[in-house]
Length: 222
Image (cartoon, rainbow, N blue to C red; front, side, top):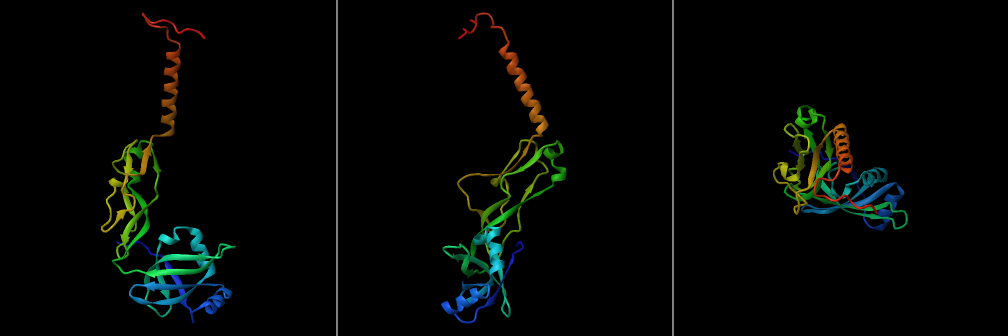
């Protein structure tokens, strides 16, 4: 099931070339172009403030958007380039590529944890430690999963969840394939850690004060 795809609002840019692009920037817009998908390229304008906010949010180049242009049918797009001012580092032009439903793209998919209230380890006082709140997957544009599901019900303290433990949605696979990386684990309670550390210190102190057993020579003093 496809996840929620954010909208990307744009308007058609009248005219092409440097003159039209400069006018767009004077009007507080960022000029751009949409290409691919078996259609002709289309010149667009995007509100500068909206684009700047989305760029600051991160993952812009790996986010699939639903392009909305008034009077046209919505289409799925992904950014393939952002040109910036060499001095101010502000966006001056954007390239968006149309995607067909069977196009393959790399996207970051969030990890969702379920059954926390009945988890064996959490009920014992363990703590869920999330190592990767999202995972980069290669997915098809027409079948984007809303999330990766991790069931915590039978996980105990000390258990670790690896990427291989998660059932991949149909048509999806992790971008990292050379190692079985960690998604999360259930750590022991901090109070239990303190008790174990205190016990270890007590054993060490006792060992330091022991007399040498028969046959052992006392350690020479320096």
